[in-house]
Length: 412
Image (cartoon, one colour):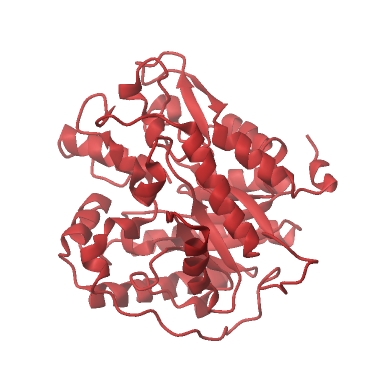
């Protein structure tokens, strides 16, 4: 998610850091907490029953007639952009959604980010293409009241789409402990991450405040939206101890790496104990050798303190590694008959590919499946286009095998 998560009135160093971290979205933020904090986390709660009816397409019989994921999707992030050249464009968005539907063969688009007009325009296009809209407004570093109003306005639009016949799921947000002020100490996302790494926070207080805000957000979601409700949580259930009774679908941002397939299965089974559909709301890796082992912290190979930002050390670009990880974990999700999986993400405009100069090839630190290329690499206002990576083609093959012929009959 591209967000303005920092205070740009600070020093140039600070602004560069905020822009870089914003671009990377702090995926799987629990990875930033570190082993020291994880060691003191309490055990996760026992399974509990749902207070609502099971979501459509929920936990399914494991019979041979129903195998694999119900929904195969792509995360599409909307935001203001960091430069005039990468600002959100309705024209670009429409073209991207068409490609996601017809070339990538996804049946779901997770529309996430901030800005109600950007979110709703993108959701409209996804619905027009006949795809499942996974609508996830994610506004950060503003007062709670503003975050909840942003959610309510977006959710109302999702309900209008649903009543018009579109398939819509509303996710009330993403990893609130990181983006919502006063849950973890810190004036912005960067300070919160630093406090988490240092352990300079009260875990009990954090979880109490997180639970209170999550309950508020779920209440707002229910008040404006009558379809299935979800939330995107960090994958450590002891750290982000979500009460999934509040939601119809369990949502997890998943960036684990294991050498053996069975280890993924064992970890993912912990999220099935609630007896609800499990959606992988994000999964992916960056575009360099060794990136899967870095999990949600792969973005950290960029030194944003330099102008322009550059790749640290001897990182080696590898589209093959990215593609292999995506297909490997997707195979696990399919084998477990999970409800949905959304690859993170389609494009990261502010991380351009520099084939002529690996030191400035910021796309290596991107989780996107397409690579942006500027017409004039050193001009912030330059126009740009994207080209597919190996990961795009790998996902298209896997998704395409599961799309019925009828899915290709959407209007142009």
